[in-house]
Length: 502
Image (cartoon, rainbow, N blue to C red; front, side):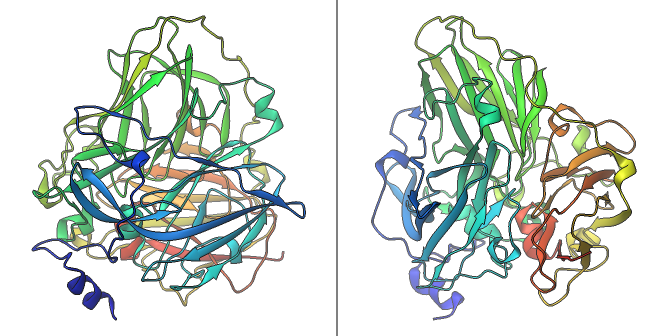
């Protein structure tokens, strides 16, 4: 049955909306459903550590259709990893060898991309590693990453947007000895909490919909309802004096400025690829889709706190002013967008006052980027064409049969990412953690002073990155670089590169 026939027969299509590709089964996970009152206990994804077999950490996972009640009493078809929606937190350690056995129980093909990992191209989980219905994919690789929050998600060719939106994503915790020596909060589900922040469009009947229109293809799908780990109006009852929040922007297109109500401060300790050199006292953190941050919140006074998010306009207005800086396009459009709103992310209710614990003043040893080591500069220009009609990088749309760049292994390079379009774009590079050199010659903000794999590039801005691919050569099988607004990725703002022997 082709995709259009499947959608029609499942009865999911509605005027002006594209329905999900799958018919949902009746299985439900009570821990991932919202309660009927005004607030709901935050769902904490179950922790899965796999099994040690012949020296490797082995995970057995299934991609499954499911149902979730985004509105109580109204079930919507979803996709999950060992769950009806989203998946467990996978935990592993730096230096381990990991093996996955992933069974696709969906009615369509899918992929599972290991976002932020350095690994062989055959294990990357990009569009070339298709898992067909009924098939199993068994990638394996060494965990080379520093301790941090990573994630896995669909990267299916031209279908990453709807599959991630339907729930095909899960967090990954990498731990290591270096971080554990610092004695940071690390008791999973108690004082060390993953927050997958996602916006969704809910129609008048209470069902989840994935809207497709000219507007959403250009701006990306942005909904007016916020869910954290699948929970709306989430509440967490804290039992400790400090709380470590590992925050992932898991939305398809929306940017978030995260802050505490009342202009309270947070300690920013880590970004995509691990710890910063020291804690930074901040009052807000901006995350684009795919980016991560870790903050520590002081609860020692025993007062309730609320984590909020505003959503900056992600466009330049027609006169050339930057919406990212406060102007730009307004209005909800046909996606139910509410860009000017302030969203409640999480209510934190401490049990009582507690002793304040000091965060170490030194976290990680990070030398400044050494530009003298770079032997080549590559330039990537992101553009959208007229009204978003031609998503491209360096003037070309994604072509599965074209290798855009060949990069020698072990070679330090500077990549210049220039944005010629009206929107900000989060730029993600597979198989590497890079350092941000500067933004139009200016020093990067604290979140960008450590290792990164995704970086926001504002309209008419250029961001320079220093990077090196340390191993895993393959002259034929490529990795991706792309905009992490998933509708832009699906529309062609993506390119391919191979890592080759020097």
